[in-house]
Length: 151
Image (tube, rainbow, N blue to C red; front, side):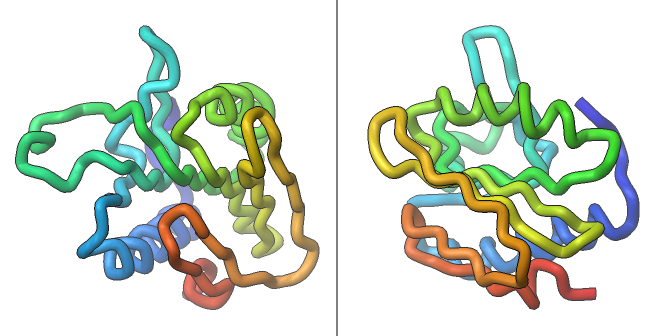
């Protein structure tokens, strides 16, 4: 777990959260920041920068500290977190049956790497070299490149 971050990191994290919160308000999914844990194993949690969970919207979840049903996970990259994000966390996230999309957000180059489930144990992995809008089919929405990286 890493506490704090650069102003740019926090701004991009906020951009993603705000965009998702408005789009998912009346759905069965809820976006959370890194304060909410994702249960990755029986005794392990991770704190992705932004995570969309299927649970979380009902009052019965008000006291929850972790959820085990992430649908989409966003990791905002920095030089200090790249190795952990791209190796350890990626392996843990893809092992979760509920996960459909994992997005690595490169704030230095304003680029996305998008990993999406295509079937049981099957994934696409695309590192975009140009600006691209992000489709999130599992929650029927899209985030534009401009809103992710807005200043």
